[in-house]
Image (cartoon, rainbow, N blue to C red; front, side):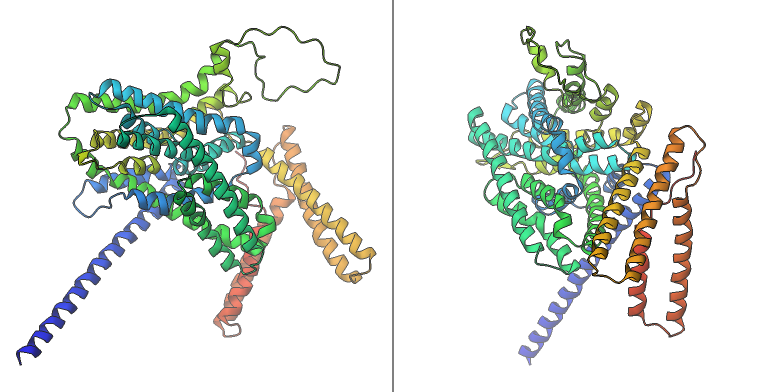
Length: 589
């Protein structure tokens, strides 16, 4: 029976392999669960102590990387194709296309001009201190490090609290600077491979990438918009939303256009059209799902940054310490200093323009007087024209200059540098990777930890009362619009009087609560002691009532008078009502 024994032994080997493979998969699942635990712990710790969660995750992950055990190596293609598109798309959905258009000068200055200048400065500085390094290879690192990371800036910015104007500028910059940087990076790497740096070719490729990315983004947003208008199920609509960033990124990259720009364009357009594309329940469902996606992907991105420490340090053992120190110093120095110089230098240069104010001067209605002779344009006045925003104060510019944290996109781009070119290694690849990693750590940890204190010392903070005032006024106007529509329906005799009365009572109560909030804000503006408004009392009492209603529904379910399915439906109704209440206000300080 030798043949039977061979079959039996073969089956035993196959079973053993499956068991070992299953154990290996269980180990990977356990490793992933450890990552989720770290993300949740960092979020709770950040909320408890007021620290930025990204910094906590990077530090914890870097410490873990130095300990014995499995680590995760950064795969550039995976990061750029699977992680970055949904994060950028989510940020674009929550951004304001109107506000970005209003701050277009600042966005272009920071996301295009500053990126190019930073890449060139880093490249020139590295060539000066690293013997044998070509300008094209140095510019590849410069392009990778030029853009502040969208994930880092927005994650930390949301935590520390930014004024609306600064938040809009940072969001707009973060959404578009990656397209500029990755296009420059691709061209620089191609120049290393070809052995020449052709400026007209660089400009042509950059223009084609930008135009192609915009075109793909516009086309995808139109197609997705047409599809969503035909979908009514919230779960299906959310599924389409999750697939949209990849639907924009993949065809753009296949056409050698900017996939990042395509994703951002589609997100901005679809986000501005959400009212006409999505129902109320679909918007609530999609926002909840995207908040979960943001939390997990952002957390794993920062864990991934720290995990690369163990792989980066040994790779520079063959370089002289003086070369490593000089290259690292000039790289970090350029990354940290170019941004504040770009933002603040134009404001202190002499100019023939009137001093900027926080509001544009009104246009006079009188007939125009003869134009006064203008002073000749000089390089200094031309430089002032590059100032990101003529109406940002010096304090706001200082705060903006300290928001240049680098992140995973920079690392992914540097790790994607070719290992070899025509059989020879990419020039100084390990040194470039090390310089990029140190720059990311210094900016992310250093600037991330100090960003909040810098804003506090500068006195730059959001005007919370103004936001409340705007929302209250808008609620009053919306309630008036609803009441006018109700009056028209009543005049047409389309609804019974008792139903009209009930609907009018609901609308008038919403209007009264908003007017009460406005009166409370006016009392605070007049210097009177802040007191709890009727709206705050209404919300507090109503939340207490809703909690009692939930307890009663739970009792009905526990005693067998209500099914679980019915309980969930009724709880959803209470959850939506509670979500519509104004958020609890902190006690006055």
